[in-house]
Image (cartoon, rainbow, N blue to C red; front, side):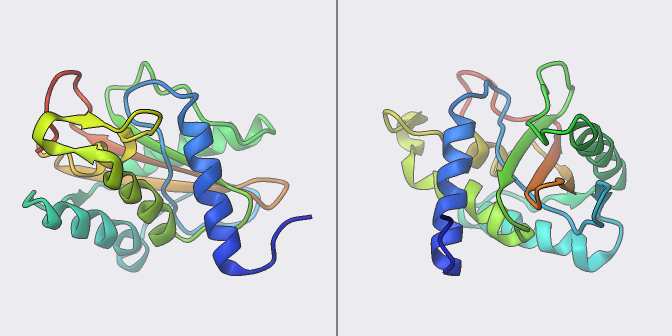
Length: 186
């Protein structure tokens, strides 16, 4: 039976994010959310929704002295198309972003996850990242965090789909992409 407390749900979602992220390859795969309408993927088109994604991204970037990201309606539209395709396939599984020219963070939660909590899960990976030697702690994932704070990334667009089960699939695209092997994010 699923935990009912909100703290338990968030902890469970973070655990799911990390477990699924461990199965994914670079570029970054993690989670991020946009307001959605049941049955379809939605891109963020209003300033408030975009800010729900931008604010936590830019707080994390400011913490490491990296310039803020700009919202891209084009990236949000591309993310919405991809999330919608995954939703239509029934499983709301992560998309294969290996051929994309953009960086990507993807996430899945068993409930309607808010943008800020999804971005917070990505940013929380930063506790395992050591900038001094550009490494991630053994057995941990840092790729979604490093994509969030990647210095050369200038814009982001995100979308979210609500799955038939009520779960949330989220996708953010980043331009230019980060997580270049051997390079430090900042």
